[in-house]
Amino acid sequence: MADGSIEARVRRLEDERDIVRTLYRYAQGLDYGPEQDFVDVFTEDAKWIRDPVRRETRRFEGRNAFAQMFRDHTHAPEYFHKHVVANPQVDVAGDTARATSYLIFICDHPEGPYIRAFSRCIDRLVRCPDGRWRIQERHAQLESWAERDFPPGPWKTLPTVTR
Image (cartoon, rainbow, N blue to C red; front, side, top):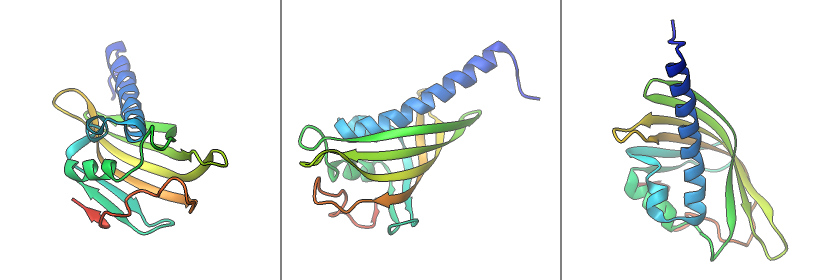
């Protein structure tokens, strides 16, 4: 039987909140940086996988790859955009968790803002020795992508599998 004590219930709520903050740090880090803030949302051996829903598979493996992912993406103030995390659902089991959320990519454009893409993200997270929750594996199911001329699309200079 699960521990129903007030301490255990508060711990679960705090864990869920910290996990959602990790998802928000991913989005804000990618939009505004700095690079280290973005890279720090992942474990050392993390994987980011774009599942082939609407576009080809792409993988990033390890923190070096996440630094490359960051560098090959646009950022403010050169280009303004927002990675919006929506509807996060979090299930915690001790020091591991699963989070499912939507990611909506809104971009600035000379003719006005538009939704460039939206995805469903399925994350496996772990509590690290420093107490922070980090993404160990992300499956990004890109469901829609607008081919627009502005801003430039990310990761065009990187291989399909980046380590």
